[in-house]
Length: 428
Image (cartoon, rainbow, N blue to C red; front, side):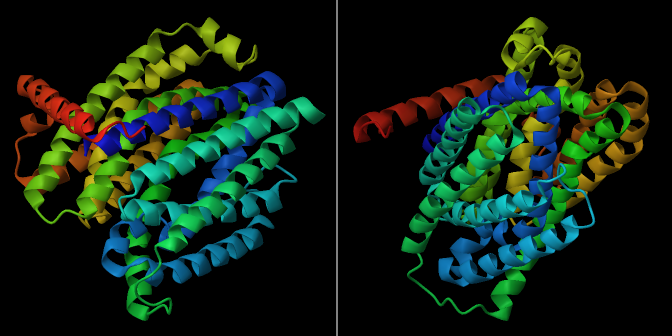
């Protein structure tokens, strides 16, 4: 398991760096208003993907080993197209994106839905290295395209949109080619049972993702309502930086989901989860601490003169980031063992905190209130997941905390990985 984790972490480093460079370019050329508009566009796309992923999302990772690739492809494609049609109709009445970008919102969401289908199938087949490579290509192409368009015809929101078209269009073709090569067994004809399994597994997951998304992003709409798009631009940069601390935990969680979905022995599932949970907490805490120690002047130099006051936001959200680092691992364990409803309950509990505390805190304190609300919501979700995990495994709470012997275990695992890599040669 160490090899795919290391490869995923390396890929996440490149992806996070590319995303931050995109944000930096937008901040330097489009200002906080442009950053706010991009944040709303990305949020609108993500909301559409919540519906699209009911069938074509993370549930595929769990079901591909059980149903086969052919059985899930056509239902997933059909659902993605239907989701795009529903989103287009809804966008005529609900402002899901900045004015004048509605059609691009739907088209980009459809491309990303297709890409998600292919990539989740690859993860379900434990082809994690290939998935990582495709995602790296996607983000690097978007960065290069955005930078080229900004230099070519001046700064405009359409430069970001065009670069996103290029990046996601390319990766849909690449990921689709690798996916269809494996569709050799089973039948393409969808069955009622298979479709019901897709909806059941994906439905719970997407309800949980929707609740979690609202935990992450409901503050965006409230900040724009009470403080305006420029304030939202500053807060979105802070959250981009803060969520970068999940680089390792998200990588670990994705690999764990794939592994647990293909493991039969509960003991091995629990052992893997315990080790990776502790690693995620440590990395999350280290990253959060590093962000807090960085000076505001550095952020201003990177993201533009209008982006100021990030450090207090990062300080308030730091405990929540550590909590969500652990949650990334436990949520993937619950998904990989078919207990996805608990992720939904944990996310809803966090959303309740966001709804009640967020309105009052953001209205009174703006972005600072949003950061404090995020910490409360994230901590609530993790607390529920910990209670459920301990109830399932019958372990004491102390087993979730880093201890002295964990360092020895980690060292042995690393030595074993180095030994195997030396025998096989580098995979880079």
